[in-house]
Length: 362
Length: 201
Image (cartoon, rainbow over all chains, first blue to last red; front, side, top):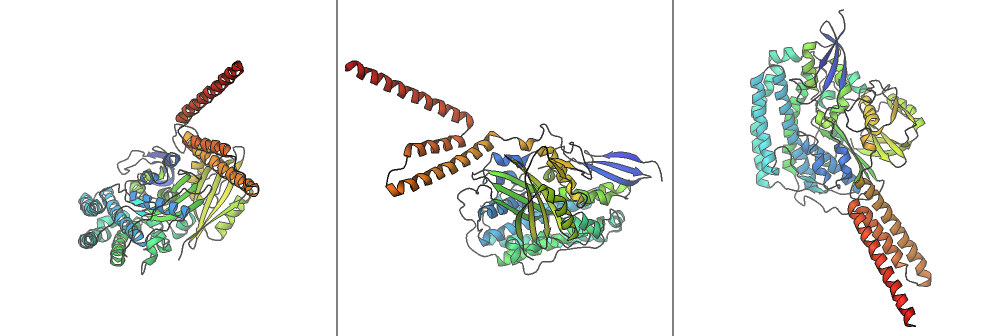
């Protein structure tokens, strides 16, 4: 065994779109230990809840992340509704799930593109991002936005999707599905992709469980936990939902889980559209959360479980709002997965947890 | 599988036992958060099992108290324990990966413990409204048996104070100054009126 050397990785690195720093302790090109450091872009958004009333804060919540924007507004609204005992109309719940699953589709395809770029398969990266544009087009037509949608409010949603648009979503998704399956084959069957991912960054089921990992990162280590299976909101009306898991626990498994979840999300959207009830899309919410009232909720974001907490103080402003994002939960697992990998594979391992530092440093 | 949430209160001394118990029973650590209150920092530890999300709350942790780390059982908690230390100034002992106060690069020390004027005003407003409500109820209870009218000016004064507490502090100060000037003017007018009456007599 050679001499231990500490190699700084990030916060500025080609594979990292956001600042994350790691001190990599390496011996003979093998990582022995990885010490993470975040905190370069902490924005203090949770503190803003003191100066925005609970209706205004939804616009802050969705700006936590440019990819999970819808999920954050959805999770925030769901938590405040629990805090105030608001019953959301059924149609609004279905619409929320449709948009939330569309977010997952575009997030996973975006990630697959980034993964392809990381292992030097740039044409595959371009195909992925071109496909993602078609999902963003759906968002633009149904919400008016491509990144920030501002379509959720406490008590429901602000826009409906009419029957013609719902039919168009189905048509577009069918087209995406056909093209996506070809791209997915490249990810899952191409030998050059498998050479870079199979057996790399292994995380065992025991480690994933002990470290409380969430999302595709955990499911790729055979942990069958997906918040959607808890049946919150319109997810409870799904005829059948089984989390996609894989027992391999390596980078390939994490890629495979995400790749298959794209198809699963498309199926969920199609089922929601087929069964969406008619009716109101929002209820009027009056009053303020009671002093000392508390509520908590979880939502399955593209990167995994996100926890939301709210406490009222009797005024329109909340006393405290908290979002625990999936990346902050998965940092411990990432450190574990990095142990023993080659230095050249560090970027691949980091990428396969799909880190979102802007979420983590809300 | 369904989803349910529970909130329970524990003491600081019960935390290590709770952590050991949760670990032994196969619960998943979800998160740790802190809330700044007048009595100190509330710490909320969340665990989940079979769709039940239990939030165990330690009320009013003060600066001189030390909280034991739970990273011996749940390593994932190191992020949140460092966060709670840096943002709220809670002393946590024995964190597996301890950044010693350098987890976040902050411009201000313990920023989440600073009570903003808006938050102070909101708290004050909620308190005054509660007081006014209580005063109103008390007055109506007292008035009911003797059928006497409630002490309206006092209640109005409390309501006014509650309104001022909810306003922008600068604006509220201006309104108060204007009211004081008006009161002084009225008092002076009354005084001169009384003087004139005396001279006439």
